[in-house]
Length: 351
Image 1 (cartoon, rainbow, N blue to C red):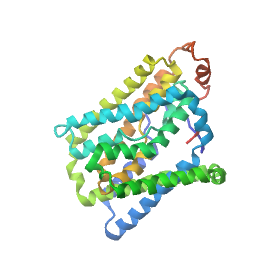
Image 2: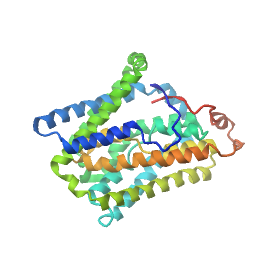
Image 3: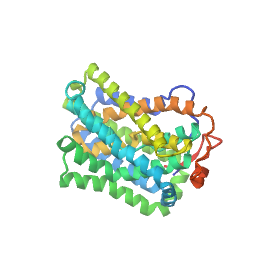
Image 4: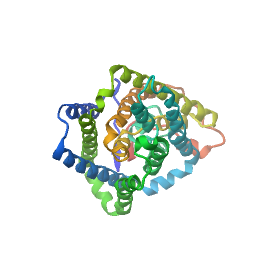
């Protein structure tokens, strides 16, 4: 679905939606859903997840995705950052248990490493930094598409019993709550695409409202089960420190690794922003399916990392925007042409 990405404010981003997420967590802490209310919230959350992935499928332009394959080296690099390097660092975090992180927080830390990349914010930051915006659009779309299958499979493989294990029941939940709605959206896109475009503002509220419902349900279950007694201020501070190290590593590896692979400046910017970030919108619904009643602690690292990456990447994007122009690579004229900076950081993208 086409959407206008606004110019980011000069101050560090702490937008209203993140405040709404924090308010939802507070509401779940004060008034958690119990009994019949919990059953109703759980059913509504399941339906909301299915609706989200239907809308994701209906918005993704297959033609744009196929056209983006022309820049396959860049996309493979982003996918490798997202689904290879990130998970390896997540596995290495097992060494932090039990001295720095509890097993439950480490499982959430590992899960955030398995989530696909963002689309909107990666595009916005790439545009502000005068990077390859078309590549960022395609890279984010490919990552989101791959994540529908790759994230649950990696979670089943790497999280094991912590994430519910890889049972027939968990596989069916993934298929029917994530994959089937997404494929239905793709199949019906020809007929519903125009409607989605005409009502994009309202459907954007549906998107965000659905995620808030998922967060409320997950954190309510955590409150009723008493899991939040396990998170002390010291553990929370340790988690933030571990995530800061993770983000710094990925920002450095994606930037300097892309340089070693011979990418030009504009492409390196797209790789850095798309390859170092994680999607809250995709991760929260997936966690509710994969972790079930244990989703509340599992999504906490992802929520914190999401805010941290926005703050840090905003600073980096503004610095990159002041970089001197770099001549395009001689051996890749087509890629250089596609990598030219846009004159206006406000761009139209396909979600």
